[in-house]
Image (tube, rainbow, N blue to C red):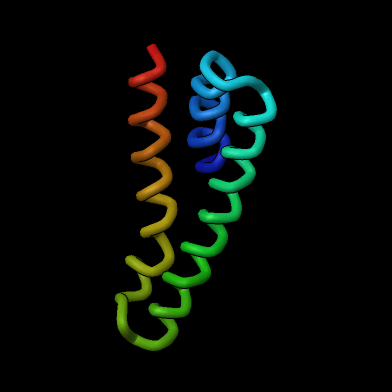
Length: 75
């Protein structure tokens, strides 16, 4: 749900300005960035560098806020 909320406004904005290929490429890149960030934060949580709740939810919070920003900016 977080990636749909982030990717849809991003793809719609890019589709207006740069074409469908750019929108798909950027959305896929953001999906991979989310997975990498989420796994990195989970590793920090397992090592004790972050509290478990922060490690589990930080990537969702960051991408959720980014999706809200893009959705508001799209209008």
